[in-house]
Amino acid sequence: MATSFCNRRVLLAKFLLAIMAACCTLVESQGTRVGFYSTTCPRAESIVQSTVQSHFRSDPTIAPGLLRMHFHDCFVQGCDASILIDGPNTEKTAPPNLLLRGYDVIDDAKTQIEAICPGVVSCADILSFAARDSVVLTGGVSWAVPTGRKDGRVSLASEAANLPGFRDSVDLQKQKFAAKGLNTQDLITLVGGHTIGTTACQFFRYRLYNFSTTTANGADPSINAAFVSQLQALCPQNGDGSRRIGLDNGSVNRFDNSFFANLRDGKGILESDQKLWTDASTQTIVQRFLGIRGLLGLTFNVEFGRSMVKMSNIEIKTGTAGEIRRVCSRIN
Ligand code: HEM
Ligand SMILES: *[C@@H]1O[C@H](CO)[C@@H](O)[C@H](O)[C@H]1NC(C)=O
Ligand SMILES: *[C@@H]1O[C@H](CO)[C@@H](O)[C@H](O)[C@H]1NC(C)=O
Image (cartoon, rainbow, N blue to C red):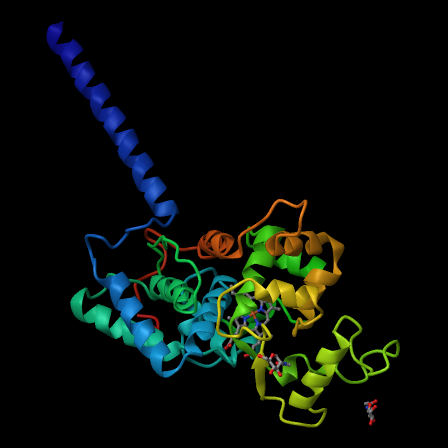
């Protein structure tokens, strides 16, 4: 009698433990967490940081390059480093990805990490760390990067067509972000990533010439007229379409909220960016970043990290899904 009672207690305890274990594995396999490598590869994060730093010192354009690369990775097959895979018809061969920069930085960090903890740290996590480090190097506020992503085994150029386009309406931009679990505030915050980096003339020059019959200069009426002349001088109608100009006029290398002031002033470079001001539904959020009186203020550099954590958790592969690639440019 006493034994059976005892056994039942033991059984119950075992049962509860089993449930707890199943529950915890489940929780862990579903998400990323800060400090995922703290016992398996404690130096991973600092190796990425020092690698990004040293590349940045010789070429500051890798900071915007890596930030954009993380975005383009996350929006296609989730944040799984599918953007890094070489080969015919992989994502990196698709038109929106042709000008991405920073692949060598990821390879460099991966090589160093593999040398000390082989097969442990995913390329997807390295890219996520590198994007954060790029923001910090350009003056942004740091955030803790949750890790534990696995690398994907699929990379298709055709899927890059789902990335937001520079002519997209605000509604379409919202839709594309919502499809990834990102709300309208995340959209505006993350597009604020254009506070650093440049664009080729080919992506906005059409706004400068014969775009409208309502303006004397023929340009998109949403562009500040004095600014149009500057842009036309830098990007002549039949000039070099690959020439690059800053996305955040006057503050191209600083991670600050001046990008939003430029939108207010009609100095947005991409049509999709300027529309965030033209459209009433998004203008209010831009105004909140500008600290307009009477509106609840938003601090860009704080919100950016928050939205980045959301973006870097899009459709991630964890647990038994995916793999830890040995070389970031090819599946194992
Ligand atoms: C509606 C959404 C977006 C559109 C249509 C868009 C479009 C573009 C385009 C056309 C360029 C110029 C590319 C080039 O000429 O090399 C660019 C650059 C850039 N984008 Fe976006 N983007 C969007 C959202 C984002 C987001 C969410 C981020 C990051 C969080 C981001 C980060 C960047 C950065 C940092 C650059 C500069 C790249 C460099 O200097 O190499 N963009 N974007
Ligand atoms: C655009 O405008 C310019 C100058 O106003 C003119 O020379 C050119 O022929 C026009 N191009 C087209 C395609 O209409
Ligand atoms: C932007 O700002 C700078 C001043 O830093 C100016 O010299 C430049 O010509 C401006 N215009 C464009 C289109 O980049």
